[in-house]
Length: 304
Image 1 (tube, rainbow, N blue to C red):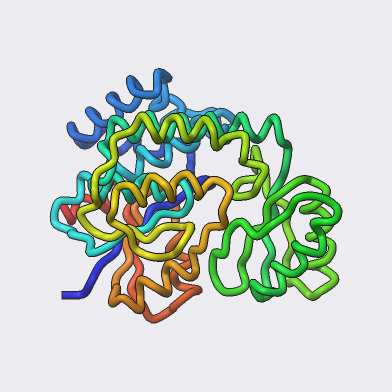
Image 2 (cartoon, rainbow, N blue to C red):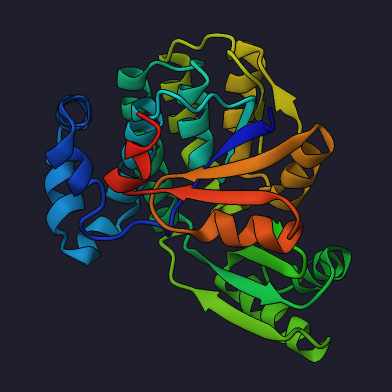
């Protein structure tokens, strides 16, 4: 039997209409989605199903929406048993629920608090992010160091070979973008985001997140979850809580995570949640492994 891993997407994978077919076709999905509406104290499902897109794009709604879509899918898949899991930024919370490290109801509330905290940090410490394609990680890191004379900037996501996202203050990121262009980057593109995620500018969110993490019950994971901060597997509940706190201001080591999973014997990856972003990244990291996507009810149906 091939070893399998579940992967869970992060912010940016949302779309209007997400999880509506799950709600319409599954009693379990309907109950989970209604529970989530109650837990966040907002009509989250209405925004997911109907938009408007502008509202769905707000961090405070985007995060619980993607999380909910992913976790509902994972709970409907009865016959697929993962040997490990990982999630991209927010997706790490979905992975931890799938691994039994956080209970669904508490996790929904925690993710909602994380979204609110990050949105708050984005307003008090305004910043931006940019995608850099075609440069080596150490080159981008050095250029960020050089640019930090203009303002805070660091690597935020090491996504796949030659694809890195940088994050920080507007001046710092703009200066780093300029330097990356001068040093031969194929593409330099500012991203539409509500804050400088995975940078020191998320510091104001940390206190709020710490409070929410302290109020959440954590359990040892049933299978290893590879974390963004270390790119290594964890199962210990205390370690999990600590790493979720650090994750806010630390880079997402996605490429390293996938490489570690492959070297630990994972042969099949299943992206569980909206969109196909992670499937694309895995193929770029290693074209030889098998990659599948589970987003709609018809994708779930074969595994119920």
